[in-house]
Image 1 (cartoon, helix red, strand yellow):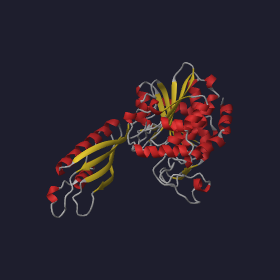
Image 2 (tube, rainbow, N blue to C red):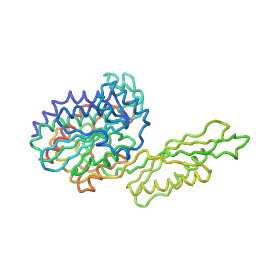
Image 3 (cartoon, rainbow, N blue to C red):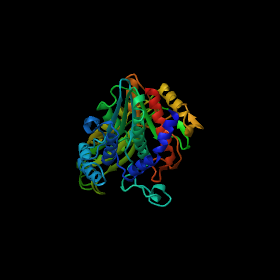
Image 4 (cartoon, rainbow, N blue to C red):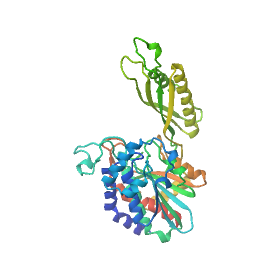
Length: 434
């Protein structure tokens, strides 16, 4: 199998690069991936997969941090103008931009692979020092950029889909490819899980390019201690009044928010693990001589476990309510994102490592030990769900040299990592389901 698989993956190099560069030129942020998802669904349909989109794979009530409908409509229209299939785009109205594709190969377990597809809200560099600009595949959207490698992840998923078609007769079970929107801000996994996309899944695999590893050829086969996180906005609403003539008639939302911001960072820590809390943004007020009637605060908590994160979140809610009451203002909390903690299954790590040992790209820097994750990833929720229903999962990192760090406007990765990433995932699936 090895020689055939290596040849098949190598033959897809030009197609992989073309997929990646197309997605890179047309980046779409969370819940607006209309063009991206319609392209993915079209290709998977052509390959013969059973494809589900829209409300079949996204539970609308579980979506967090969704842009306003009028903004979504603008993105839908742009997606169609840029080559998205109108029928598919319209079926994703409301931001239901997930795609799930199944290849059923007879009785057997379901093996799911998750590929995130959204871009980041930053403006890409436009100068000759930046390879995508120099090669004319930089972002055409001034407010979005694939600065986290999700364009590469989507490309790997599509190439994997094509390769696995050649091995359909050797597989016993179902391959499920999950193309997830809104990973940035950890907003998309819960809505897909709540739609049932992981029901019956026994194996799940997630992948990232370059994160934790900027060494070409390195492979991190598993990760542990993803931080659970909850992301939320708070709107304080008070009353305006003349700051000089009648200050007593006002209710100062700015002071309520400021008091909350200071006291949030004084929340006690938890004996069961590390925690974080950050007030990342605070906007308030109308003018110099008006008692501020409004304030918006963007906050996140994190915890080494979901229990610790929940403790931080509940504590934060009490602090915020107390600050609002102290200044006589109203407050409203809106959940904008969140995911649980998680760690890779040892059996899944070893299975991936066994596949990697046969691939030349990974010969020198194979890391079987599980790496500690210092951040949060939406995949952690999916992996934990599968583990809690008796299955296995792991999250791997394919090493590659980077032009700049993730979420930097000069971010770019070495495209030579794409072919071995496809070969690795294909080999793992085939060996597991054969």
